Image (cartoon, rainbow, N blue to C red; front, side):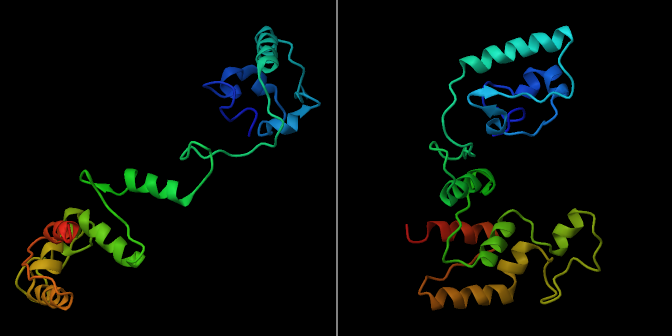
Length: 201
C-alpha cells in the first residue's frame, strides 16, 4: 500500500492531509513497508522541514502514526468487491451485471453456454447499437439508401433486419420449429427478447 497516495489511515490520503510534507518527500510513490524500519518511520526529505506549516504537519503526522496499529504482515491489495478483500471473477461478474449490463432497468444475463460473440451481438442489439442504415443516419452518417437491399421492402433497421423481414421471419420460424417451440410472429427485437426471457417459466 502506498504511504502517501492510498487512503489507509483516514478518509483522505496523507498527500491530501499533509501537502507541505508531501512536497518535501523524495519518494512520493513509496510503500508503507519501505518507510518503516523496526517500527519507526525513516523519512527521506528532499530538504529538512523548516517552515511553520511543514513543522506543524510533521508533528500532527507523527501523532497519528504513533496511535495507528500496524499489522505485522506484508502490504497487499484488497478487493472492494468482496467483504473479505479477496478478488474473484464471480464478484467482478456481479459488478458488471449490475452496473454495465443493466439495460432499461432490466438485467442482461450472460450465459456460459452461449458463445461470447453471440451474447455481445444480442447485448448491442438490445441497446440499439447495431450499425444498420437507420442507426447510422441518427449518428449523422450518410448512406446510399435506408431501404434494406436484401428485400427492398422496409427500412434497414434492427427490427426489420432481424425480425420482420421475410428472410429473417423464415429463419426464426425454422429455428423455433427445430427446437419444438410454438410459432410466434415477432416484429421487434424486444418482443423476441421478452419471449426468450419468459420461455420455460
